[in-house]
Image (cartoon, rainbow, N blue to C red):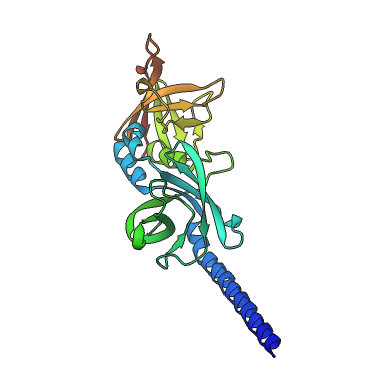
Length: 277
């Protein structure tokens, strides 16, 4: 009789554990189905986008690029109850964290493995907020007793084309500063129609097909921290320029080193780009 009782208890316990695991698995699937279409895609820090839109200068806005600045979420990679999220830290190095399809502090957030290196008690959750017609991805930063310490919003960036710039932050910068059609006048006074795309593609300037705007100044010496764009970077045809944006007009100047090779200086005006309406 005693043996039968022990077996019965063990059987009930195993069934209960199995039921609990089944419920968790079903809950994970439901949360994944809810969150996946919302969080999928490329996301860039909203405060940086807003600041850059006003400053028109990557250098002036650079100090905002701290901690997690962009995320690239592919929900097709979802497996089990978790998803790996690649991120950019300080716009200088790559990293990543796991997001778990389990209930977070609120219905609109999920727990993550992202650590707070300053205080191991703290934690992060990934969620979303809807403001008017826009949906923002949000990193919620929690402290002891589940106190919300701060939060950071991210704006969704259109996907890259097959041949375009893969980096989401670069696409955001391209879109804000250069994307569009221009009437371009070169130093000889020749006028041409030129197009820059958010993907980093360039049309209308002979011998050049791509452009790259420098946004990472972490490893640069002070003399080389300047707003710079390069046509066909890292090719034999690469051509760097220092740029300045004022209203609908962008001016590209030759980028040249001083004689001491300690700084990059603005040279002769090479192109005047007037954006078309």
